[in-house]
Each structure stands twice: as structure tokens, then as C-alpha cells.
Length: 282
Length: 312
Image (cartoon, rainbow over all chains, first blue to last red; front, side, top):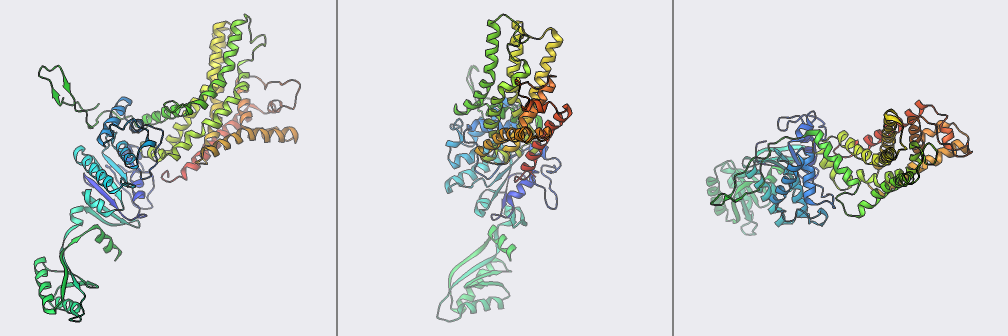
């Protein structure tokens, strides 16, 4: 993985948390091995974890502790001297937007604020890598957007590599530079987001199912296939590929006109993370 | 150290500066595993004693400390008022006899206060956070045990050290530096031994449940129940005194007596007291029984925590 934000994406039960635990050296892999920051998590776990910040998914925090004490304590446990930990705890809480709230006890904070506190404790010791397990869990759409923006800023402005897990594909697409997609413990895709999603070499043509002329959709499909175009049909939707987009659009237009069909939608295809999972399932 | 930061704004005459104290890189030293363990030990000790927590959390631990210290303060007061050698004249109990007076405080502390030190971390999500740091499972548990043992030693060692110093200043203390050091070593050794045995057992029980109330009941049952059952079996059913190995409190007491080089206290003419039967056990048996309590407690603790998600 390169610097930036890496999204670990997959449905619930895909193995995201298990992978994060394995990367931290807290779980032995059933097979294979891993290197994180050049270190083997199993044999060099302590040295690795000294350079990594982690925020677990569970919304469990010591309710009676003040936010600043909580962040300071974990910064100390991660190796910072006491005075430095105290300073950086405050700085981290300011960074995540909780500067004014830092002396409040965690039990009095909202879910959104507690997620920010978890983020603050993960970055307080200035780690090289931060692992965030479902950092937007329990947040409303506005809070979710703010949290993702914050994570992006932390990565970009402070040169901290972030791995965040999420089951929300649009969330990962909105903030991540790289993607690791898992499905039932299996790697579906891995690479820069721009290479995995984005414009595709195809066109989606959706037709209106009309009674007159009968069989117009079939006629369009037949005409396109006869023109040597790859066609995938789902109901009245035809996914066209194998040619340049302009050519596909022209051929689609002509085929529809010849068959007397009616177009509901004609658009260039955009490959999404959902498509990756669909392809994996197929 | 933190990277130095240029002032964001400097007054014309240079007398005043405004620094932009933002989040910044840290390139100073990191204290590794030792620093992590020290941070957990200090934090856990403060937590156990209720320091930095609301007042209701301070009451019980400090009540135990007060219960343990009150007899010592009273004895010192008596020693100060009455100008005689109180220990030699058998007016006040000797050092090793003091444990009998603070056993209630010990049990109270272990039963009510100690379970919270482990249970809270599992309940409030601190355990996975700790394990994401340089700490490993063994170092986390060792830190917790050390925190309990040190705070417990406040009760087992603190009052006796206070007595020793007060008696010494008052003139009733041990004669000569050699005797004084011997008493000091015996106080420390017996205090640590009792703290270690009870700490291991208390933490083992506490590891078995996420509910503090259940842990409290379990520890109290172990401390009092083991005493009751073994006493009945040996004294009423006339069984082998080695059954006292299962009596947690009695084994700690017996080890303390061996460290002080004395037999069990003679309680009047009652020869059927547990102390009398325990005196029949060899010193090695007593040491082995205490070691077994510590080992068994550590084994249960380790077994239980290895079964928790993310600790493999």
C-alpha cells in the first residue's frame, strides 16, 4: 500500500476486522504472511504496534474518563513521555474538532464525538500508519461526511497513511486513494481507486418496453449483435461493450431508430466498487 | 522532542510571539514496552485507588486503607502515652500478629476493589485498545497484576512499616541495626507474599466474568468459602491438615508466620484452631501451596484471556 487513505471494503463478515487484527499481529493468519511498515506482525508485533495507531469499531469507551486523559493515557502507552503525551492529546483533540470539549467525560459525549475521540487517540502518538475499523459506524450522513473529510485531511496534511474499513462502498470511493476489496475472506480487488473504478469502455442502453412495435427490444439487441458489438442484456437494459463509446452510441442510436424502439436512458458506463463485487460473485 | 515551530505572528519589537500550536510530527524518543507497562501500572493504581475519579470511587479503597492503618495508629498512640516496651511486655501484638488485625481490610480490598481493575477494561473497550499498542497479552496482565500487588502492598506492608518506624522513634523498636533490618525484610517479604497470593486468586476470579458484582461475589466466596470448607473438613471431619492448602487466607498467614520464624498464634486453650493444625505442615509445603495458588491464578487468568477475541 502506498501513502494516502486505503479503503478496506467488504460486506459485514467479509473479514475486514480479522484482517486488521492480523495486520496488528493480534491474530495469527490461517495461511500466508504479511509485512506492515516492513515488519512481520507476528514476530515483530510490539515494534510494529509502536508505529501504528488503531481505532476499533466497538463504541465502548471508559465513560468516566475525560477525553483528554483518555487520549493522553493511550499516547503514553504507545511510548510518548508524559509531558509530550499531554500536549499531543490536546493537539489531537483540537485537530479532530474537540478542542473545546476535551475536558468533558466520554460518557457525556455523542456518538459522533466519541468517534472523533477514537480517531484522536489513534493519531496522538504520531504514528506512521493508522488503522480505523468502521470509523463512521453509528454516524448520521452529515457526521459521516465530516468524519471522512477529517480523515482525508489528516492523511494529506500530516502525511499519515490511513487504512479504514467500511462496508459502505460510496464512503470508500469518496475518500480513499487505494482500495482492498474483500468478500467472504477472499481478496476481490486491490489497487489504486482510479484504476478500479471510473469510466469504462462501454455504454448502457435502457429501452422502454412498448407494445407497438412488438419485439422492439429484441430487434435492437439482434441488430447490435449483428454489428459485432458485445451485448449483455438484463430485461430491457443492454450493456454494450467492445467498441469505442462514440461508436457504440452511434450504433445504438441507429439500431433503436431502425427497430422503432424508444430509449429511456443512454449513458456511458461507469465502473463502481459494486461492479467489482458483482463480477467477483459472477 | 517535538519539532520546533516558527512563531506564526511576531510583534514588531519582537517582545511578543503568537505560536500556532497545531498537531505536528513527533520525532522524540519512544519508551517501548517498559514505558507502556509503566503507564498501565500507574493508571491502574490510580484507578484502583479512585484517584482522578468521582468521589464515590474513592470511598471503598481508602476505607480499606483506613481499616488497615487504624490499629497501627492506635498502637503507636498507646506506645507514646505509656512509657514502657509494649512489645516485649506483650501489651501490644508483635509485627507478625498485626496481619490478623488487617485481614478484614485485606479481604475487603480484594473482594470489592480488585475485580474492577480487570473487569472495567473488558467492559469499556480498553482491552482491544491496549492490545493495539506495544503491550502484549502477558505484559498487559503483568502490568495489571503489578498494579494490584503494589496497591495491596499498601495494606499489607504500609501499616507495619509505619509501626516499625513509630516504635523505633518511640524507643520500642528492634534493638540494633541488624534486628531492625531483619524485621524490615520480614515485613516486606511477608507483605509481598500475601499480596502475590491474594492478587493472583482475585485476578483469576475477576477474569471469569464481565460483571463486577459477580466478580466481587466470586472473590469473597473464594476467600471466605475456602476458609470455611477446609476448616470443617480438617477440624470437624478430622481429615488431613494438608487440606489447608486449599485455604487461601490460611496459607498466606502460614507463610507469613514462617517468614517471621514463629509458629501460629496460640488462641487460648483451643487446640483445634486452624492455626494449630497448620503448624503441623512443613514450611516447604506452605511455600509450595502459596506458589500453587499464584501459579493456578496466573494459569486461569492466561487461559481466560487467551479465549478473548483478538488476544491469540
